[in-house]
Length: 352
Image (cartoon, rainbow, N blue to C red; front, side, top):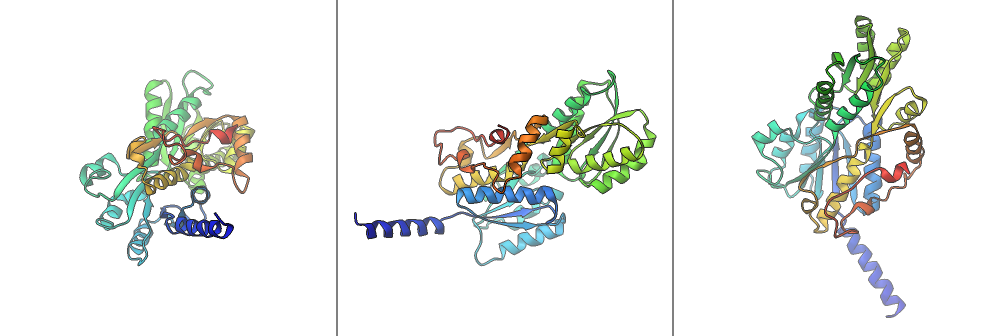
C-alpha cells in the first residue's frame, strides 16, 4: 500500500469516526458556580475526551423551571443530540420523560433517578417511555449508613447525642442518605438523634441553623452531615460557641479533603464525583452496539461512595489538583473489555 493511499484511508477513517461520535447533553441541576456540580461536569468532560464523545453541559441553577425550560430547548433543536442525561432533582424526572416521549433522543437518568412511587405511576426504564434507556445512581443509602457507623464509633461514651444536617427535602440523594442514618440508628439505639435539619446543601444555611439549635442541645457531641458545605457551616457556629464536636462530611472538594487530612472532619465519604464519567462510558458502549443492560442491567447502582482516611485523602487531593487527574475512562469500557460482565468504574487507581 502506498503512503498516499494509507494517508487517505486514515483521513477518511478519522472523519468517519468524528462524524459517528455520540453527542450528549447533560442537564446539570446545580449552579454554574457550585463547586460540586462544576467539578462533576469537569470530570464528565474528561471522560468525554477519553471516549471521543461530544458533551454539552447546561446548568439548571437549582431551579426546576430552568431545568424544564432547557429540556424543551433541547427538544426543539433542529440538530438533536443522541442522548440526554438528566437527574431527578426537584422530582422533575416524570415531566422530562413526558416531554421527550416519542423523541429520537435517548434518555438516561443520572445521580438520582425516579423514585419507586414515581415509577409506579409512569413506569420504569424501557417500558412506557421506550427512549428512557437506563439509569446510574451512587450508593447514597450505604454512604449515609457508613458515615453514621464511623461517627458513632467516635462517641465519647457508649451512648451519645447527635444532630443531623441533610440537603433538600425533595432530593432523592438526601432522602437515601437519611435512610442510611436511620439504619445505623436502628442498630445502635443508645445513639440519640436530637434533630434532623435541612441545610439545603449550603454552608450559610447550616451555619444559621446551627447558631440557633446548638444551644438547645448542650450534650450533643456528634454532627452527621450529608455534604461538606453544611459540615463547615456547623463547624463555624460551633467554634463561635466554644463547642468541640465530631463531624462527617461527603464530597471531594479540596477544602473537604484538607479538612480530613487535618482532622477537622472526622469521617469523609467520597468517590461519587466520577459517576457522570461512568455514565458516559455506558452510553459510549451503547452507541457502539454494546448494550450496558447486558453488563449489570439497564438500571445500575455504582458503589463509588466510600470512606477515606487521612492518607487516602492526601493522595486524592494531589491527584485532583492536576489538570488531568490521570484516570483513563476507556479502561472501564466494554469496547476494551468485551468479556466483562459488570462495569467496575471506581476511584481505586486515584488512591494508590
